[in-house]
Image (cartoon, rainbow, N blue to C red; front, top):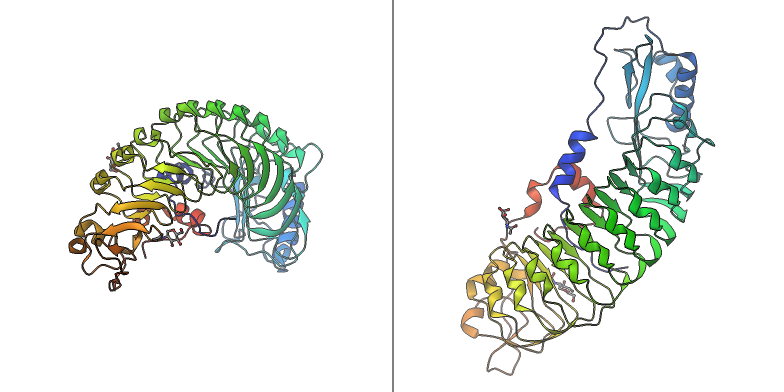
Length: 455
Ligand SMILES: *[C@@H]1O[C@H](CO)[C@@H](O)[C@H](O)[C@H]1NC(C)=O
Ligand SMILES: *[C@@H]1O[C@H](CO)[C@@H](O)[C@H](O)[C@H]1NC(C)=O
């Protein structure tokens, strides 16, 4: 595991996309159903069973005998009035206030897959104490489009193969549980999927080559598991993919050449794997990339200059990976770059003078390399980055004393062989904090993993 959490910002498109398409509630009944309208007895009974499995032992049957009726509906459920003059449950949402919280002994109710009109399931922080598995009927027929089971530490066992029967699924989020075993290849037969997140489990085995079949996928997150083997070449078939996160697994080999076909990709994270080998030449075709996050891999090769062509890059992270040679000056063409992490490699030579033209940069870490010569930054550049500039651990670097006056660094002053100790700044960098513009969705999704550097 990486010691430092990477800072990154999820692309904004994803949040707005999900907010519009998937977080919105199904419309409420247009006709005005009478209060005497009831649910079908079998559906009502299933709902009572689910409520009993999940929620606090309140007398729901007595207090809310008609859980869909206006005025007496349960929190955490949504219903639609059907053509058959009955109410039907379309959404179950447990665990996030104001929805019902789950009782400590709650277990996964496989009955959700028998509710004939259910479209969305959200169970967050529900299965916490009693070990339970993601059980499903043998061949479920369910119209569910969004299944989100997040942060359930007692949800264990495999991802069931029957999940591939949920043909209407568009969003599948099984993040932060204790799911284990291999990813069933059938999951990639769910061709309507646009978002697949299996991150933060203990899934193992290879990424199935069938991954290339889910052609509508915009976001694929398999990070923080124990997936091994190579990144399948078929991943290049996901032509709409915008976000790919495979970080913190046990993946080996190189980045497949097919990656060049992912020309919608704007975020890729491959940190903390065992990847090595050269970068594919076609990497330069990924012109929409804004985030390239690939720390902690045993690359042990010269740092390629190709990144200079990816002009939309905002974050480039290539730390702890054994890169050698000099820092390509082409990186200074990345005028929108805000974060550059090259720390703990074997980089030699000078810091490219052109770096001082990186007007958006607010986090630059070149520490623990073998860089040498005069630091080419002006006093105002140094002041702007403040503590977010880290050049420490490069014994051959020195600072022009004029530029460095009053700045806190651990760099020697040029021409002075004793260590030069400057006062520490009292304030952190005044660099603007990009996170303020992020939506609540992204903030929620990212807060569990990423810390803010701009405090
Ligand atoms: C850099 O960022 C600005 C502002 O977000 C944007 O308008 C511009 O298109 C970006 N430049 C590139 C090359 O992506
Ligand atoms: C730079 O990287 C080093 C690891 O080599 C880390 O300890 C340090 O906190 C980083 N500095 C900044 C400013 O992020």
